Length: 109
Image (tube, helix red, strand yellow):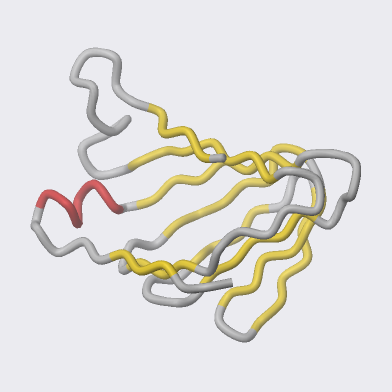
């Protein structure tokens, strides 16, 4: 599940150039592969898991940060069978939207 933080005055992104999101990965959850031309930075708020970036498997736990490059397939996995994992991400997607050049693609599991 993903929730976008919004500017309460404008209803748009937190900043004109940066979007912020909270993600919850259910226990044992695996996201659908996705790629976008926006770059992102992820902070692990709680939990442990793995993020597959292209063909690299990156293990993470609470307190870790990951940089996600643009147009690379990404998939997140919660490695706990009992506890949810929580990630916070910031992305440059709003500026790409403003220029009309944002691209996003979802893959199959």
